[in-house]
Amino acid sequence: MKKIYTVSVENRSGVLAKVAGLFARRGFNIDSLAVGATDDPKVSVMTIVSSGDERTLEQIEKQLNKKLDVIKIKTYEENEAVSRELMLLKVKYNKSNRKDIMEIVDAMKAEIVDMSENQMLIQICDRPERTAMMIRLLYQISIVEIARTGTLALPKCD
Image (cartoon, rainbow, N blue to C red; front, side, top):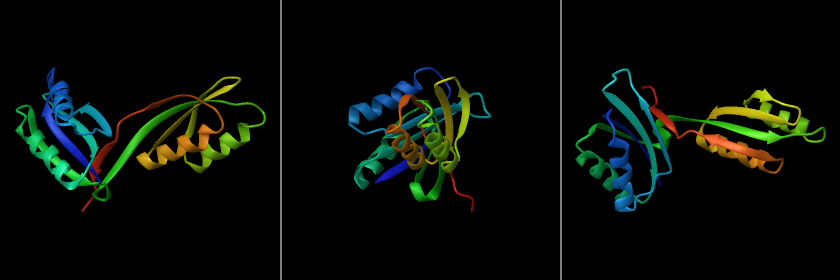
């Protein structure tokens, strides 16, 4: 089971290390972690995706609430939130596989953002499972390098 935690924290040095340390000490797994500033320069938001059994996920929330730097925690099941991940992939191409790559890019609603004579840089912003699918589809062709953000999420509209 997975859960998404949106954690508002004080924007100061060491807060990320404290939260990561909590996960490490307790043996909790972090599937994804993204941190960014908010409209208030004193507050940052951490979006943490973690997996485990129900008891573990409850413990994560309780332990996060104990941290002094934590202002507010919102938790969501995967089906209660809209989540996105940004990924950049660099692939090698040649005359024989160029068309296959272009078809995958088109089908996945991705975008080619840079090209050279034998490489393409592809961007996709989608649900984490779709970015994983993109990797699987291009893996057989020739992935040179991948960069992925952590998952970002907001609750679905009422």
